[in-house]
Length: 88
Image (tube, rainbow, N blue to C red; front, side, top):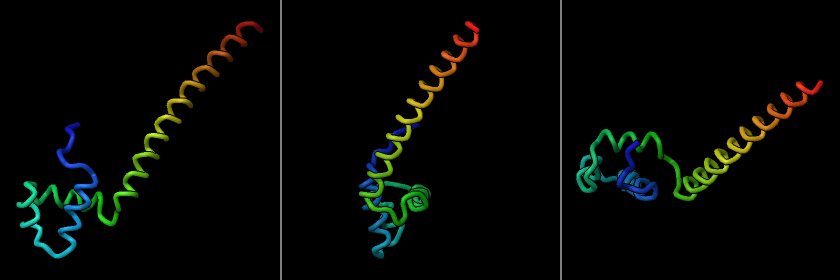
């Protein structure tokens, strides 16, 4: 996936300009983005603050770490059960 040239905090600031009353076309021209991209961002980030976005990213990272730990433990548990079943 291509990385955006705008950070999430910049995206929130751009959307705030549009919410402040500037016409969408002017905001898009000012920042060099398309109207479609503006509305994609608006559907994804509308009503979200920078702090909330940061917290969501932290939670996603923690969640992926926990999923990895669970997968490793489940694999280890299955291997132990397999070894124990062979001994009996």
